[in-house]
Length: 392
Image 1: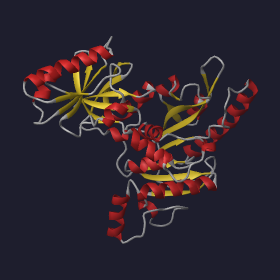
Image 2: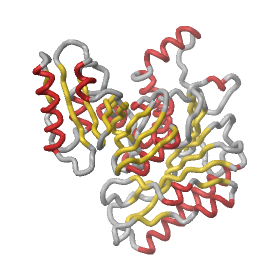
Image 3: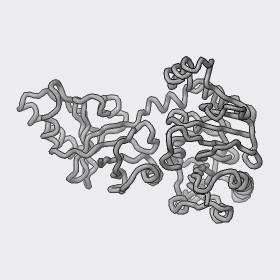
Image 4: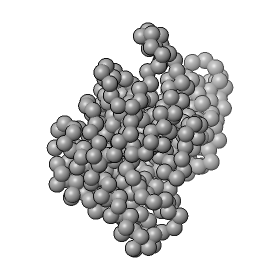
């Protein structure tokens, strides 16, 4: 089945995420990509703002076959030279014909050629209601939206976590999802390791996606934070699922922290203190997704001397971790890691020059990582440079 993705603010990262999971991925414009799959869930795609499904009929035929009742219609036009006017014209033209045939139609107002994620979400155009429809036009092709990124849910998972620490950086939940998805399709129940787990954002998102998770961190405080956050997410978003399992097994809780003990292979998550450059993780490790140490927080562009110090410190930790990991994972195990890159005076980012060293350790570095997958806000001093590896 053919789908269309509206790419996020970092299109190349969004495209890499789709390519890791689906087949026939093609970027059709700066903001769009098509792909093929049997089924797709927007809730697990951190890099896509909307997902739309190709429609066989003309837009008018499609709308005329909707169930009886008032139609709420939005139109997003991503065609070349599209404008607010072109999108509005399409919507009003469809409304006029539908009204003539006795249908009641409300058109969602466009402020641009395409509806924003917030506008689509708050008007209920996610495809869950058969009469609340967003049509997407891309040149001569038409699609119906079947999923919208739930920005409210992301905000809640980010801001409502009980344990947060701005000093160690704030990994956005959607970026955590991307890091996990860049590992490629993994069977449900696969065990994902985050050796720099911090406050547990990657663990949280992997758990929500149906994976077992294993987190370690050098800081006991971060282990405490991760544990509190995972307990919180398990009591909120996963409460019903966990409660059912606990009642069935007559266990007080599926929470598992500390070192592995006999029988813990079935634990949904495990968290313990460990130095990523020397720790011996307990198998199995099916994939690794993490954000490494990003260096000192910075509010201004670093001097050349300061940058060199940070590059050496961060590079040593990252290479030390990957050397330690290489002896503990099987061939073809995916490893996705966000490492730092620093803003320079010429408005470009300077990346760590460690990819050749990583390959010398027995990893295969993806082409997209060679080209650069940078995730950052405008003028952010320390960006995240996403590296996608496979153990040879």
